[in-house]
Length: 120
Image 1 (spheres, rainbow, N blue to C red):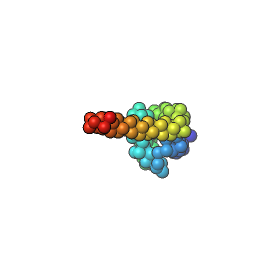
Image 2: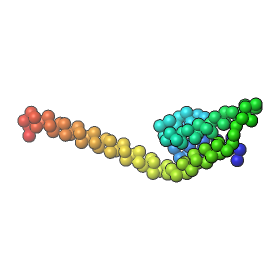
Image 3: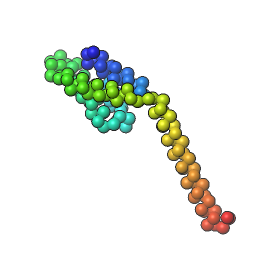
Image 4: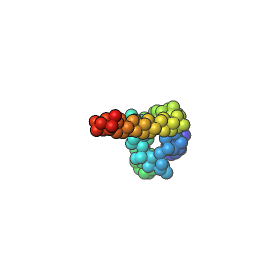
């Protein structure tokens, strides 16, 4: 697999697993700041830099493919371990829990005010 194909594959996986919008890996990398952990973002950065260098005819000879392949392999391994449905379910449960806590705090404050005023 050459670098372009590898980058397209990573971009496709980032779209399927994480839902990151963008047309290529460079755009997806720019939008993935809060979604990917820092060590994986660094590895995607390695692939993106190599991809940018490989698109230039003279600079493409400067790309060392061993660290790029290792970084791409690590990103693929991380993305393979993500279950998109479990991730969405966790986000839904987190939002519902946040709303429930907010409602409980609100009712607690209302009860305190009513008790303080002598209604209970």
